[in-house]
Amino acid sequence: MSLYLPNKVTLIKIIEETPTIKTFVFKPHVSFSFKTGQFVELTYPGAGEAPFTPSSSPNKKDEFEVTIMRVGRVTELFHNAKEGEVLGVRGPYGNGYPLDDFKGKELLIVGGGVGLAPLRSLIYALYARINDFKKIVICYGARSPQDIIYKYQLDEFKDQTKVEFRLTVDRAEPTWKGNVGIVTTTLDKLPIDTKSATGIVCGPPIMMKFVSLKLLELGFAPDKVYLSMEKNMSCGLGKCGHCRLGKYYICKDGPVFKLQDIKDMWDIWD
Ligand SMILES: Cc1cc2nc3c(=O)[nH]c(=O)nc-3n(C[C@H](O)[C@H](O)[C@H](O)COP(=O)(O)OP(=O)(O)OC[C@H]3O[C@@H](n4cnc5c(N)ncnc54)[C@H](O)[C@@H]3O)c2cc1C
Ligand code: FES
Image 1: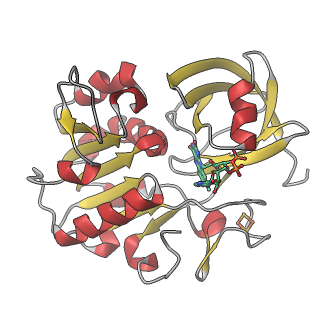
Image 2: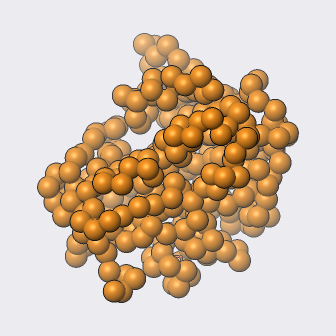
């Protein structure tokens, strides 16, 4: 079968997260599984496809979820799709998070905006083997309270003995009782040893840049900071060159990279 040919998936549920973000629940017609952090090419038949990272648990085999922010033509198509429609999926592609390397470590997970989507999948995977990790700190920043995704689940994420969850918004109305400030403001006084801890970051490029700089300032080693990189993609298979980042193809060598391996590339944050 052609590597470019998508498999059918039925859209069984749509969850409105924010005015611009929806989570889509798909039932694959043929068996489908992924490693947390890998991405798929989701196809709107006859109209286009785009890469997304599943936001659901990799341990869930009968369904998977993708959380999509509406930014342009293809994401608009998905946002207008209706429950019951049959779409397509290619993949999964890329490397995903090296869960075994995180074993025995203190982990700091930092998400910005829709960047919490791949991290939710990671969080599910970590919680499924929580005894493997020493401590997990999750910091999530959204633009405003109405831009927070998975609001209905955040208490569940917090309700774990080894986990500390920090939430902030860039700006808020007077009724907001939580933190206000960009996500880097949640990174002070971390209850972990930053010299030996592992950092995992996903969000818009500007957020990843400033969080990476802050983690280095806090003493994180660049080979213990993992970034989920995004670039325009086409084939997803390391063949077309659209996703080149220096000597790497994001679709094949990533999308998860160690900061150590990419920090000196001039176009890393473009
Ligand atoms: C590996 C990977 C995983 C991704 N996972 C998710 C996810 O889980 N959820 C999600 O909502 N999005 C995710 N994206 C981004 C998503 O693929 C793009 O938003 C989508 O391709 C935009 O398509 P479009 O036709 O709607 O927008 P276009 O019409 O192509 O572009 C509209 C605007 O969005 C910008 N844009 C396009 N692609 C990207 C991109 N990859 N990153 C940042 N800005 C972009 C363009 O520069 C333009 O300003 C991921 C991208 C990659 C590469
Ligand atoms: S998307 Fe074609 S080489 Fe990566």
